[in-house]
Length: 278
Image 1 (tube, rainbow, N blue to C red):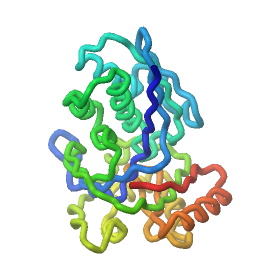
Image 2 (image 1 turned 135 degrees about the vertical axis):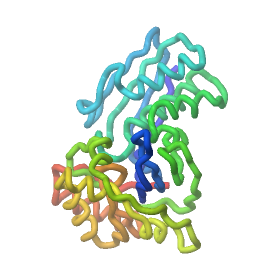
Image 3 (image 1 turned 90 degrees about the vertical axis):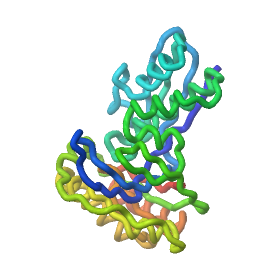
Image 4 (image 1 turned 45 degrees about the horizontal axis):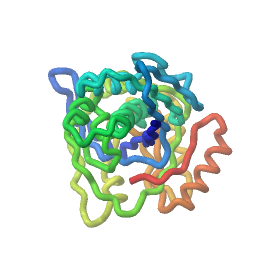
């Protein structure tokens, strides 16, 4: 039996860093959505845990026990008393260390897929294991729009009726999340609550407190934002997560696709895609 799961890219439409806790972690207030682009995960029964990775960004991720997807399989197996192994095949379509939660999305997809492969019903094992794997894994487990708080453990689902039109741009510079947070020394308040003005207005009212630190570490971030803001129909352009991926929120998919085509032609060495998100 083979099970397939889609590990959707996570996009932070705003990310407010509220402060640094005594344990070194940062309190966050963030709105996240999940895009129609992502990695493809395939799981099948095996006599031991093994992992194989292919795709355009395969060389940038570990192919061994250090891969978060492999850790997800091992931890869920131990928690649920499953000694059998699994072969994890990842088609890595998302750039790595890019602010898109790719590794977390892969791990969450493995948890979901193992639930189907092992034919087990809903269990507290899934969210509890997700929390041990990293701050982004719990929200990626559901892959639905949410406002997240704390260090990622507080997840409040948000209903988005009409899919958003995004252009995602990555200049090719990998940014390590700890480095970006270490460069962040200015904290702000939480975002306002969602009003009848809608999601787009809510996004415009927010910010990403990691944008300045990311710019200081990667010149391509500022250029990506400038290029996005110069495209017709772009309502807001901002860094996603800790970067270096930036997004543009467009009025519709026609405008997003035109912008993506123009940016891709102007910067053939960049990763540029138009995507729905919700």
